Length: 152
Length: 152
DNA sequence: ATAATTCCTACTAAACCGGTAGGTATTCAG
DNA sequence: CTGAATACCTACCGGTTTAGTAGGAATTAT
Image 1 (cartoon, rainbow over the protein chains, first blue to last red):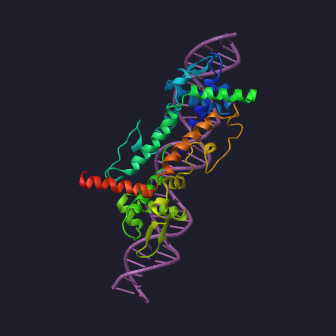
Image 2 (cartoon, rainbow over the protein chains, first blue to last red):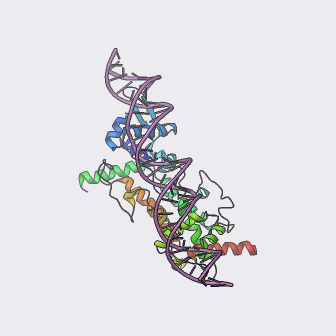
Image 3 (cartoon, protein in one colour):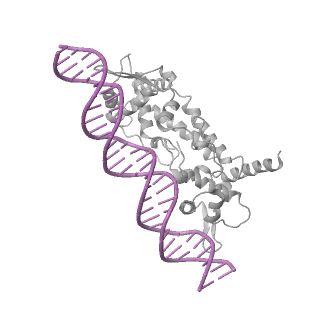
């Protein structure tokens, strides 16, 4: 049930954008420096996020990337699906890309109990990832930082 | 968050063993015929399950595989971990194979909020898979079958 | 003009996936 | 004792994915 590094990197970069201050866009170079993600690889990831309208870009000297919407309107689930495909362990349990079990793969019974199980897993994952936005994560990070700095 | 076919096949085969009647072992050939899983591939899967003490084997003419314990004592979580590794999306959120975030991968804050998120996901998955045994699945399947046959 | 940036495409080495192939050892039936 | 069925074991293999690297074209602020 691993997340690919693409998914990992995308969430790190977006969290960085969500916590960045001011209206300035961050360049791939800056994002790479702050996160440790290889720049040219991150570039491809940002392009994917852009074509999915998760971020906006500006070219030229002071160009870079910024969130295309409010951070509270971008969920981790959306981003993970974008990078790693459906959340469900099995295509037969996917909502976003459902593939019905062909007869030969579920030969024993009509009501496939395994499908029910994978659906439960999918729902459990989606329940976490679709309800967590980058706005929420940014808040949590700021709070953690505040606790750190002021030693509350 | 895909399950590999190995994980898929292993769960199918074990469910087949859990629902099989009588004390007889089932051969790879029989399991393959009943599930549609390629025999030689299934053979390797059964060997892995055997070395993990999930099933027992008997060689020779009437040989085959049977569950090594009561079906209620074999959870899906155990089998999925065996075939596909830890349930956690990220090694830093794994219980069974924890790898601490090196500094360069979580450079921004001390309390990594992403790690907390992946941990929530892991817990959600484990909550489903570690609480579901093949005994439970076999019961569900028998009930579904009963409903089917008697059209309740 | 120049430097910084995004955009785009191609390439690649390594790992993983989903098997296949073929032989050895064991066990039971006749 | 022989033969057939079975588990056991190891090697191999083609395709896909992963995790990048490389290099150049287009754009934009200074």
